[in-house]
Length: 160
Image 1 (tube, rainbow, N blue to C red):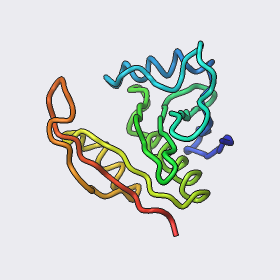
Image 2: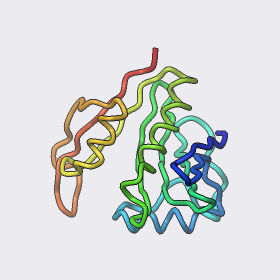
Image 3: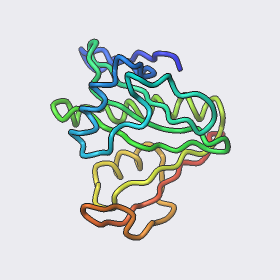
Image 4: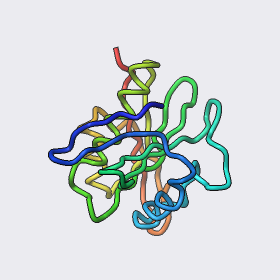
């Protein structure tokens, strides 16, 4: 994965693969978002390899990691697993930037669909994914715990 710079008004955002140096910041972002510990990033683990390996990318803003996106390549399709943005910089387009950057890389190169699950009550995430071309494709009853809640399955068709 290559770094993809993009401007964000007067700020400079970069989309890049995470590195072991990012592990502590990524773990903090996941905690702040009430998500499970990151699967792909650990200071003690080598980078993910092969099909179905969980990978992560970060959004850097002026040299500081402010967001993270985890996904995996399942061969026939991609799956977005987790997305978290620093609460101090939310609602500034960083999540959209992460999703758009990932979709540009994975769908342009491979022309495969992308899937994800989202809490039914997470209106902000559902709106983000809908703006990114995803549509509800199913439901998993009582999928989430604490609190118990359905998961909406969302999919984005393969490009061209």
